[in-house]
Structure formats: C-alpha cells, structure tokens
Amino acid sequence: MRIVTAQELESWLASGTVLEKDSRGPKVLMLSDGQILKIFHTRSHPVFSRLNPPAKKFAQNALTLQQLGIPAPQIFESLWIDIAAGISASIYQPLPGQSVESILKETPEQIDALIPQLAKFIKTLHRQGVYFRSLHLGNILQLQNGQFGLIDFLDLTKKSRSLSSWEVNRNFKHLERYLMRRKLMSFPYKKLMNTYSKL
Image (tube, rainbow, N blue to C red):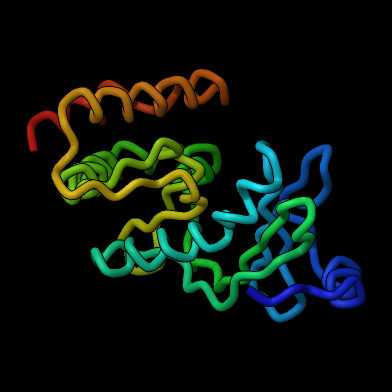
C-alpha cells in the first residue's frame, strides 16, 4: 500500500468536498475528479490495523461482491494515511445511484413498489452467503439501471454456505434497529419481511 504524503492529503482536503466526518475528522471525501476517498480510522489498537488494514479488507469485499454479480464500487487504490496510527484509506469510483433511504425521504410513494425487488435482492445476498451487518437503507443503492448495489461494506463477511435462519433473523434485527434509530418507521418493514419469507 502506498503512503500518502502530507502534501497530497492536504491538496485532497483543500480541493475536495467532505461528504461525511466525525470527531476524528473527514471520513468520506469527494475528490475534484469525482472519485471518492474513504478514510478508515481505527477503533482498536493501531497494531491490528497495520496487520490487517481496513482499506485492504474493504477492497477485498468489493471484489467479492463483484465476483458474485452484486454491483459494488470499483476500488482503484488502497492507501496509508498514517501507518503509525493505523489509518488507511481507499480511492474508488462511486456507484451511480440513490440510496433506498434517500428514496424513502424524497419520494416515499415509490417505496412500496420497490419492496418486491428489494426483498429479492436481500434474499440473493443471503443465499450467496453474504452476511452484511450494516445492511440498511443507507447502504443499499438503486442504480440507474434499476438494480440494487451495496456500499460501505467493511463489515461484510462471505460464508461458504447460505445464511442460517438465525443469521438471517439477526441481519433483519440490525435493519430494524437502524430504522428505529434513524426514525424511519414509515418504511414498510413488515411488508419487506413478509415478501422475503415467501421467496
């Protein structure tokens, strides 16, 4: 992994647009060329991130999804922002689409019509052994061609079998808690569950 110089990072921050940040600083930045810089701040001891950089795992998860036929961002480069602190980053091309959460907020009347396709998409993930703890409306994008794709999938795990019923239920519980936390209770969660169970 290439080490980003202080001058290069400063240039990106000066010319780019911050899309997401927290108390540690920018997390997602749109660069001047339209590419995305995603910065991974470590929550554990830096040594663990140095041994297993989140940026490399993110890139591997993107490749795994693409090999399964699931749209995911094209990763161009994995980088070190600060090796000592265990801070890595990825540069990728964003997926051209809109999150289901944005659709719910901006055009809620469209959501009911999306439920059958959304349930089928989630079922496909589970059948292919994709366990994605952060599977929620903000991380599922409807693409320009009508398909669904995934973003922000660092915590994704690919299993060698379909998910068990316990894992499926756990995945949906994460989604339900997300809806409650984000106050998105207008989303037809029960309809999604019922549609999923009939597939």
